[in-house]
Length: 220
Image 1 (cartoon, rainbow, N blue to C red):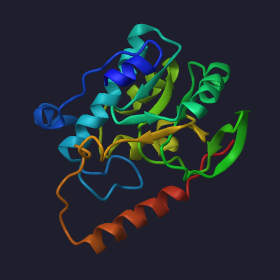
Image 2: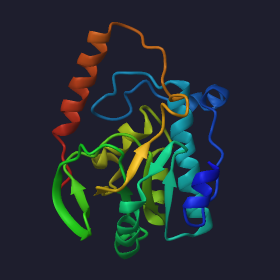
Image 3: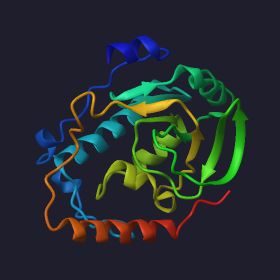
């Protein structure tokens, strides 16, 4: 955290929500994966609840502060500074209050359209929005839109963000971006939960769900 505060411009810490501590308090807004279509086949764990509410807290901070946009990063972020300068330039030139721009650690997204480029780094619209939320630019109007769409929760935050047909927010991606994760080096994720059922059964449900999501691509 100290390193990120030193490295990132005008950085501040937003205290994360402890999902286990607030699970009972927020039980009335939680649903068992059936709030939206396609249905999500797994129940939210306390860690996933806390992660989602933490991101909502960050979105609310952007709105309350009146910022045009802000960079939200998780505490396991690591940066390759040889690429980061180009990424910051792209953000400065392209980001707006309506923006949601992912800076994923994994290069898995397939572009529908390229919107801008700086050096090697490309800003594009991905066909299917990727998972994980290690780093993203969120504009004030986008934050308001997402807050309004997430007053009820039924799946993890990254899984919900894939559902552009629900939240009506275009989501762009920058790759390559110099972003990586230090999850294992920092002791592993706190979001993982004890799995129920067979591994084969879970993987089948996960694959089926992802196939349903892939049938609803973003369009430029």
